[in-house]
Length: 315
Ligand code: 13P
Ligand code: SF4
Image 1 (cartoon, rainbow, N blue to C red):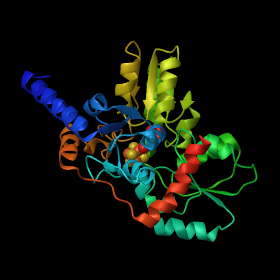
Image 2: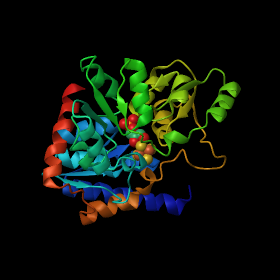
Image 3: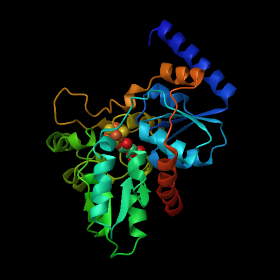
Image 4: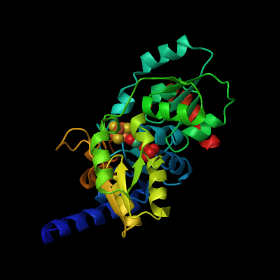
């Protein structure tokens, strides 16, 4: 890195640390955030860990470096706190694949079903949900329900298929998907596996079922990281958003982590462009200006809190 750029970065970091102390703020980051944001965060985690941490912090301000639904979850859990997100436009294609009115109509057509929603949803979808889950606890939560319980699962079809397969359930699935995870190339991953036969394949459950079936480990970002730490393997093919490689490499400097390629050669589509919209400059600006803040309609927030709380109780 050039000297000038290094000094700028150090000055920006100092500014953020000073503002953070002044505001009694906690900076949280998802594993898909840019490396430099993960470096300054007080807490890094998967969606479940971020929700748990938000629920228990005594900070006055939460800066949620992730995507919008993560900020919303924190705000619903801590309505009295100022919840900031560095970029208000940082959305999620999976959350967008589930329109709240259409989902509510689907739920209304199946009044005898329990509604389980993945955390990657808007507050309005959570408001018509019985239990929220993340990829880190979906299996546990669903296994805690009676075997004959009728369930609607939305919006991620791939995660739903995974849970159906490992639990033997027959949940009704909403046909949503994440544009990053739904795009990994089986052919190119098998090619990598031929070149690195000893490598373990780590797959996020938002990937297609065919990829889940060739995985050594299917799990949330935190579960994949834990597997990499504990495994005696030296090489790993990582089939999820490539931001996780920063923490994997930091935790296991002696191991080799290879990002899996998407199906379009030359395309950077194993990057979530929404996650990467956040920058250190935007974190500084948010802390300095007290915006953009996350706001959730009071009635929707009240209804969405119940299924989020149930998730935290059950996991
Ligand atoms: P995790 O809960 O596994 O961190 O996943 C969040 C996400 O957005 C995956 O695309
Ligand atoms: Fe949403 Fe996919 Fe980005 Fe995760 S990787 S935040 S599911 S768009």
